[in-house]
Length: 344
Image 1: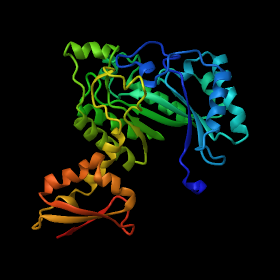
Image 2 (image 1 turned 90 degrees about the vertical axis):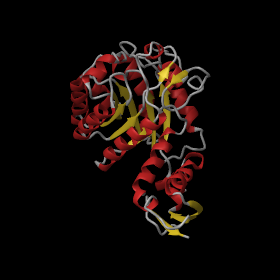
Image 3 (image 1 turned 30 degrees about the vertical axis):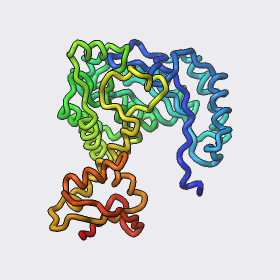
Image 4 (image 1 turned 180 degrees about the vertical axis):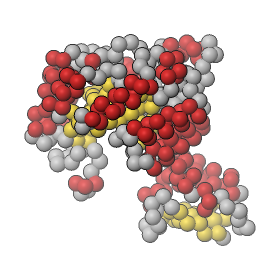
């Protein structure tokens, strides 16, 4: 594999709930990440990096990044922040590690800490925006407003950071139209990237109490796929890549009874990408046909998207067209994202 085709090598450092001022209605980061909240140290970070660099997936010269996930990084005590970033910075100076990414809240920025981060080679900051609707933010007890979201993105961009935004469709008080109004506001802010995490009902959260009291209904999987597909399409059409959709699985999150309800699927992002692929090719796939069988030609890289999860994409095509798909034929002369159908 050439260096240009190497996948980014991410070294995750989990700091669940560290620095957070309170718990939001939907949050249980310890269960989501399978990590208990604990005081992070430079020595621990160095040990994590040393272990990661021994992985066969690490290639010196490829893109590699230390990513601090969870918690509110910019509310760590200054000495703790310097300690953990100082553990990474020698690897950056020696060009073993390419960059550093942190996550934080939109209302947790101050210039002094941001300057420390710049000094220690942090280049990307992800913001837990979650919603661009003040009522939704209030109901979820986020403790910040839409204006805080706007100010945070603009402040970080103004200081030269790459900015990621994390959004959660399906929160209490949310609706499909409200969420898409929020996507319009995010597009206006032009962040560097976005993540879409549909809200889940996780045992032990206040959202679980609302759910049991029948005061909250989560999105269905089908609803979440459709909403995220529309958001993803709109964002990426404006040059804002969606780098993840759906929570990463972890052992404790997958324990029986941990997720009470909501649009959980281990391949949620793939479901959305497959939905978008089929949507893009609707005119070709679902136009009226006089025949009852067909062959579909597709670029080999797109064949999984056409087939869908467990071949559900093919089943959907057959149900909607009333025609049997006899064969899917890889054709590398076709451009990515496009198919050709041969009626039989």
